[in-house]
Image 1 (tube, helix red, strand yellow):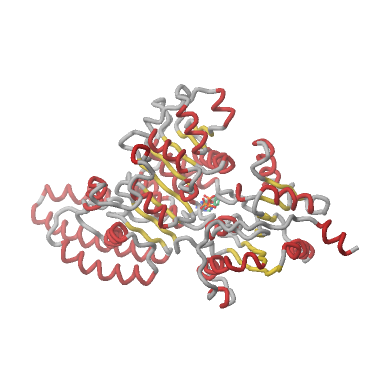
Image 2: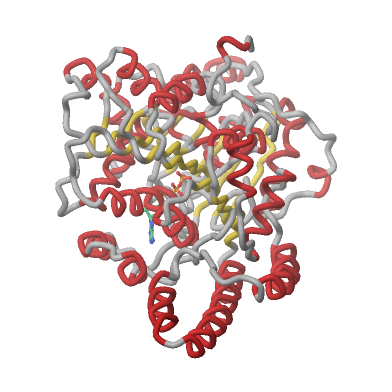
Amino acid sequence: MAKSDASFLFAGTSFDRKKFPTVFSKFKEKKEPDADSLEGQKFIENGESALTNEDTEIKFQSNNKKKRKRKTTTTSDPVEGFSVFRSSKSKKVKEDEQDGQEETDEAKKEYHRQLERDAIFRKKLNIHVSGSNVPSPLQSFAELKSRYKCKSYILRNLAELGFKEPTPIQRQAIPVLLSGRECFACAPTGSGKTFAFVCPILMRLKRASDVGVRAVFLCPTRELAAQTARECKKLARGKKFRIKLMTKQLVKGADFSKLPCDILISTPFRVQFAVRKRKLDLSKVEFLVLDESDKLFELGLVKQVDSVVKACSNPKILRSLFSATLPDTVEDLARTIMHDAVRVIIGRKNSASESIKQKLVYVGSEDGKRLALRQIFQEGWNPPVLVFVQNKERGKELYNELKFDDLRADVIHADLSQIQREDAVNNFRAGKTWVLIATDVIARGMDFKGVNCVINYDFPDSAAAYIHRIGRCGRAGRSGEAITLYTEADVPYLRNVANVMTASGCEVPSWMLSLPKKKWKKHRPQREAISTNSVDEEEE
Ligand SMILES: Nc1ncnc2c1ncn2[C@@H]1O[C@H](COP(=O)(O)OP(=O)(O)OP(=O)(O)O)[C@@H](O)[C@H]1O
């Protein structure tokens, strides 16, 4: 890329300390590294990925030893999440010097005890963190009130939604954002990432205001943006926040720079378009969330995201990245735009949800797929089922194959109008459609609670696509089943999916794991058309 058009996001993809002295010095500013911050330093300097449980345990023990030594020479421990504890002790220090000294020693001991409790708790829940002074994870939603003075409407709404306790990503990401830190999070599909950023941002916005757009949530598809807006409104119920989903129609009709709006939710394309048309001013934005961030950083979207990031010019902005898959390249890119961020990984990075039973089925050829699909439907299936295909043409073909069967099938792809797409999603949600044939347009983020089974009719084009597709089932702790059909053409790419499967505890034949490594450049082979006619005619 020519220097003149070097973009904000692309700048310094490989992290150059000289090039980014301010960012780097921020990471270096850490005064009192704790167990987590030492991990953080390692992440920042070595670009390491998630630690294994064993790593965490060993590091935790050795770091604590180092820390104990250093702690004796310091007087202040800037740990967020302990404000009540700190303020009550600091009063006593003024009253009596000696008592104060004892109190300080006691405070330090308590500080270490708390760090240990945090580390044990994180280990139990498979929460891995990097970054300086990472706030303690939440023990319960009630802590939102005791630690962060959360308004009762949020707790009421959480209870009404039936949420009894925070999910692991919520336990850690919420305190991070509430402490005014940027967050870089990777957690499995269906693990509650949406509320992990919606909840703290609503809390920090406090109340509706007319200053202009204060938070922007970017999602890769309009369906996901619409879903996020709906979820956001559920949690904000009882407060007069202006939560706006920016759709094509809305951009045409309204001037967003005059429209009161606290939270704006849309796709990068829509937001960038409105900014360019000067219908939207993002200079007051305090919170920017890139949901499904690795998708947003893909070619085709990254330029638009870049423009939005630039337009959010408030120097106090907090940026957050959330996804179920975060390749190292995205981490590198993110590091160049984030400041003093906390990295939160739940479980193993880039792995599928463990509540999904995954299966690979060899079908030989394209014709074999049709037969296998019919067999699945004949053998007693449990709707609703999602069937993923490679592109919209194949979606239409498969729909034509199944539409006369008693399966209540429908199809969704990018050629449909917005209304048709909404109808397809809503009918599936409402149980009117039993089998929804889809392209990857709904592979990410869509929360279909009841989906029991995902069938990859066409082999996914990347490991990330596989993780997101099958993640449409097995959400919020429910169980699910994923069946991936493969032909001869897919065999060279099997290993990548087999690796994801073993990482989430599914058994795969050993030969698959010993297949030669294949650099996975979007596997989209030319496939024979899906049609009964050719075979039936031959059979006749
Ligand atoms: N604390 C909670 N307790 C129970 N259910 C929850 C909790 N938080 C969120 N959920 C539910 O879990 C489901 C999945 O949440 P969400 O869509 O945020 O997942 P996600 O991690 O963003 O998934 P994806 O990676 O697919 O986008 C939703 O139905 C949501 O209502």
